[in-house]
Image (cartoon, rainbow, N blue to C red; front, side):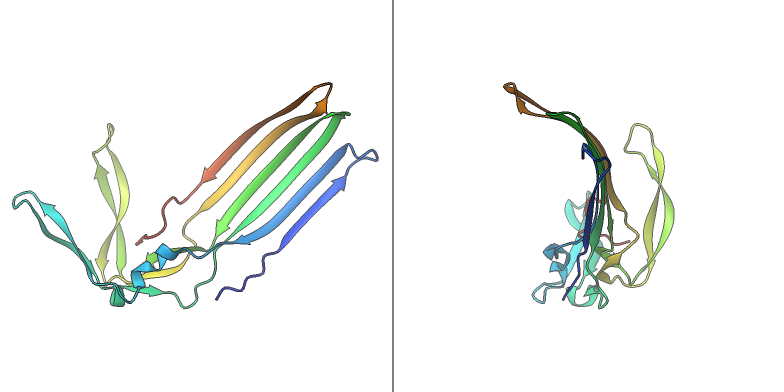
Length: 201
């Protein structure tokens, strides 16, 4: 059971007596929902999975790849805690004319404590791998299992990184003299771990 306190703090400061310039800021912590697919592997009704590679000589999938027994190879970290994101915002608003103003703001999000699957039973070694599938072959560092039996555990992974940053400029003219204007430009940068249902290493 996750019983998390989710604090939020916001402030707005008037920078001049006429209140034409206002500084705004916000910080908040937001917790995630539980994602069912991360736990489906340990369902008591699951059977053993056997995976095979395709054999071109025989025309069958008969080359053993790996096997997983859900009762032996899946588990949940007893110290599992909820994942969360910290969000930071700062903005400056300025009224230039009675019906026209601009707004400049910056937003950042940092996600932590990811709930993901990790192989905590086996040992992996980093080795170079020559990727020849691209126009310019390159050497990649990959991890091969070298010992131990895999235990895929739903746990908190702090070895993954995910953050978002955005800078926005807005111009707003309220409806007057039969016309209005709303325009904005946003620059953003997003680093994301795209798929996290299963990640062995």
